[in-house]
Image 1: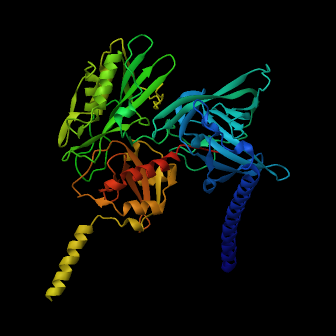
Image 2: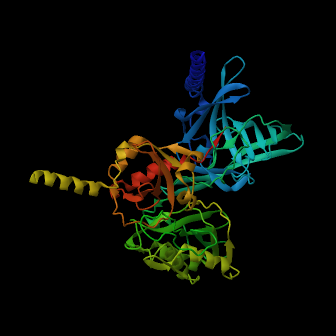
Length: 445
Length: 141
């Protein structure tokens, strides 16, 4: 009898393993068939060949690769279908009018969907995910998912309210008045660190009228920082989605004069010049400078301070991010290294101060940053020192509270952040304790 | 007898020198995670499975790390940002690693030691890491 039970158990286990193996083979087979269909029947069509990219035009229809190695299957309309991530050849960032404060790489928002119909013939759609301002990642997804052609022209989609209510969207192609509708506009920045070109682009995404609420037909979830890997669209707690620019941060600025060349010095009311000092405190709301005291302790972030320079006119906005770093590792007992300037466009911060300046004051800041030969010193000339000195060159002397740490002391993000929070500001200054995306933008006209 | 003593002494000396040095070529399943400072510093190894991650190319990692130099155990660094990574060692344990956003150094939490890559691979190393990180910000259907 025991042998029989054992045989049944082993048989069950083998059966489970066999089922899992069968499912895996079936998934891989489907992906393979979808790939074959796509490459033979779809890619050769004109609509999938890349259009020439011109300044001011949306890069949504630019050349992209399809990441078949990362493809996976889902249940779409009751049938197994394939989702394929994409990778654009040239980097850019994008968002929509649903939330202009957050920027994403298109590679994180756009997917290829290949699904079979009732006759098992494949069809293709491009999916564009557009989170709205309510979505922070710590809740259910809220925003819009559009089904489009490869150029971003959608005909339908779903709108997720974030509380489980989902509306089907249908393109309002004839501007018919059929109740509530939503219009989508894509926008973004083309970023090219190599030649220093930046331009802002927009593209209409169409207007869609809402159907009545429907059960959540098309599940979506953010595989966020606390995601357990499951498929439940509402399950689990998700950390806020980081605002994200192209991974161009930690980019050393090779030629700072060239990097800042688009700023000019034109007094007058039609030019606005601003410098924002941004502080990422090690512990937001605290003056704590450094947390660790000796070798062998777990590392702790010391935080960072950087600057955002902005010039605005009626027809252009130029923004450049600058942060000061050591070119080599530093520690309290070897605090000095050659300095370098980085493009900090993808850095976060938790407190900032924006100062609106005259053109000559702004130019002083630009000139200070443009000087060569800075040496980084963890105590006397760190990122915070650099930022405060740059502001001082324009006549703006912020508080310089020094902190103490094992083996050293000096200006630091912890103290500067609290100094900014507590300082009384002049009419030309604005404090901010909420993060806003701050990509580089604008080119020389 | 004298030769045997010399051999033993040499063996002990070599053991001391290489103590803490990880044989990176035996590590596998490298991954990088979507988590930002300050959380990257505080999270424990057993919570890594709950975080979204992407794999890092093993050949590339081994190629970079074979040139990594172990710092003296007394030395540490100021961190100005970090990426969270992990690997499986030759005893099949999951280990946490922090990769600095500047200075070409990284930290192995298990051995609590720092490593540094040579200057000539710094740009390639950061490009490799950043390309991998870019895959992390995404949605799934």
